[in-house]
Image 1 (cartoon, one colour):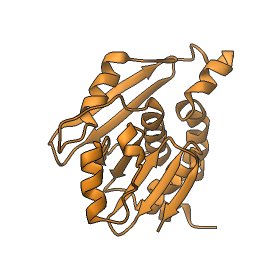
Image 2: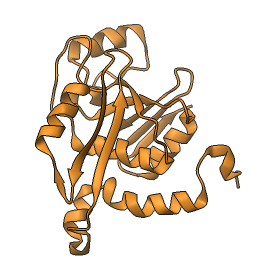
Image 3: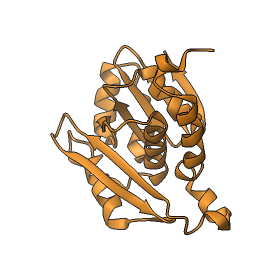
Length: 189
């Protein structure tokens, strides 16, 4: 077994985070189990964009309800910075991002590299890189590419995969992790 100090996650922290993440990563569970309702649960997301210079540090979900005004702020923050276009981001993606962040037990905000991508932006990126999917979930507001200075791509991918709630792509050469709310799968190195 790997030395937990090498990967930045302690056994105690991981077990505690899994308990908290059961509600964070899968909001439908909070509706399924009555004992979880009203338990005072909150969800928080912290990100900054090197492209726009903007940052966001906000609680977006309280006791079973997304906060509509805050979700609109998140939609704007995660817009296609090239075109300025926005869409309604899938809250499940934000939940996966927040749950992964909690699992890693970091206070550092994510650096958002890419949230929503317009079809034109996706086509332009696809013409420059074979790593860009033709029908990318970014175009549906269901994906984000993220980086942390204090955690490796491997650590971030392990945390996202532990949520078992969507796709996780490791892009070690470019130093980022893709997280989405599509089918559970993983790729990259």
